[in-house]
Length: 540
Image 1: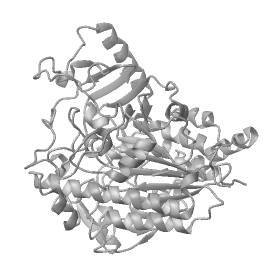
Image 2 (image 1 turned 135 degrees about the vertical axis):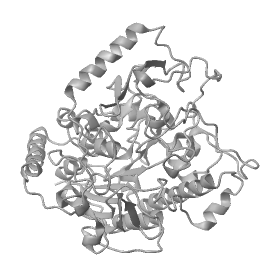
Image 3 (image 1 turned 135 degrees about the horizontal axis):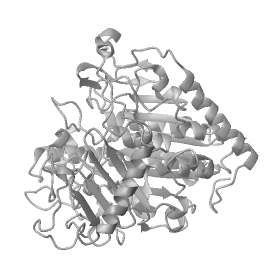
């Protein structure tokens, strides 16, 4: 038996009796806790300032690969998902042989719930959340949807919203509000004597369909009329709605008596899409570029961890230890009372809880950003040095200033924690800038040059060689890219205008192999026994 005395609730928005994970989409400068005055995020900032802000946290440059890493603990190159995102009618997903974070936590006695965006494949039902370790699912299966009628156009048009496996309509209910309401329902219905993992993956502030990509309630858009760019006004309103969601979920946890036993993890799935890219208006200031690039604006993740209890030993600080999206599986398993080494041995991730909680040195000194053999670019960070090869400025993103305004915002910016706001140093007017197209290797010292202003490959040729050798090592371990053609069988017209599974799984060997692998981990865990995550003010 597992009780709340053994386990934290986890959310990605995570709790200790419960763990909650809050997964959202935005840029570095779209939150107040990094020093942005343009969009107030008081609820998010309050949790970040009371917890630990992760300033050397990395994700993949696109959503599917990051979500795959969070759910499996593996790097996308070891999943075949290193090339691009999954389109709605593509017949593939997170490989069925992989054990998911939800399955690991379920083996520790957790009740597991997913709300919001899935985007890890669904061409057969076995790829969907209820078959990947979740007890319930409310949300959409693809990449994006209209925020109001929950339809999606990707080659074909159809609705994309489900309550568990049942297609449903909720026309007129704004998506961020809808997913918040469903998350709160899960909290209110929860038996507090059992641990819970709530994976709340908002679409916000991802764009919707191309015909109307940025959508928010009108009363929120009006708050940002001082911003000159109308796209940015709408985007800011979308972020505001998301901030309100964080406040509402936190209050629901408190009202239910679960907040004191909770760990809340907040993460993006890629850098923001700025100035019209992906029809969006995010800001990664002061970093270079954004989504779908390997520059810092594309891979430096917005993230923090919060606990109302004293499970975090050193709060109200900025963590600069290296952390990767692959680390959450092992870390969450540890928080659930398990032996994280059982997960690290099977994955690419590390248990980084001591780094987060106690400011211990990170167990990792390098992060592979990606190796994409089709688009022929790659990047890696080791220690303070980062190598980028083959990444051009296709989207002409460069370094963007904050979005211009008619006048200063009508509110005061909140103070930030020391070190939370990145200082790039003096702008070099492009002198020393490195464009790595034509496979040029660009090297940056991120400790002295966090914004990738100046290429130092000529100064440290031995570092270039060292990091190229590390890339070659990872390349030797990579799986081939999986990226099948669009399937006409997926057209929602065949399924009453709803997106959903369109094939039947003929070979279930990998699906059952994952279940067996999870059982093996559980049997070893039983031999080890559980450890208790002790904190002085936990609920009895």
